[in-house]
Image 1 (cartoon, one colour):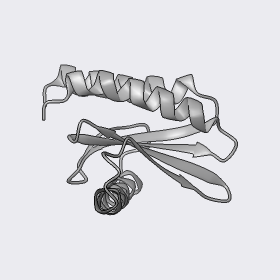
Image 2: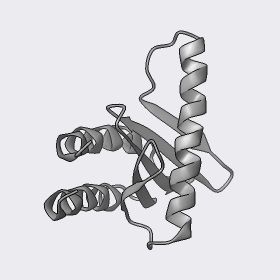
Image 3: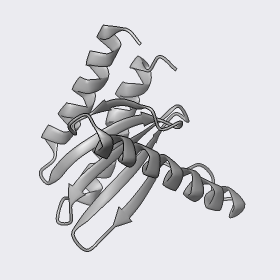
Image 4: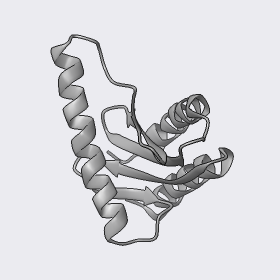
Length: 125
């Protein structure tokens, strides 16, 4: 991936995090679990999030296909102290947004889909 594309992906992820109150971080990854851009410090945490989120999305996708419910747009995981929103990017990549529990879920969903459209134009895949 070219330096320009890597910088554009990083910028898109960073802008998403900065635009929504309560968003703590985001990781953009391929469906193979390769991190393309992240607001997390480089290291095991971002790699674990990438691996687990792609596995989660694959499992949810299988359920949705079995139920004949179309294609997944977002997968939302709510916990007692936070939430994770996974957004498919044209079947090429996955955007994982990690937020506080009280962050606006609707806004995260809308802004994640907007970021996905921008990212899809830059992806080298």
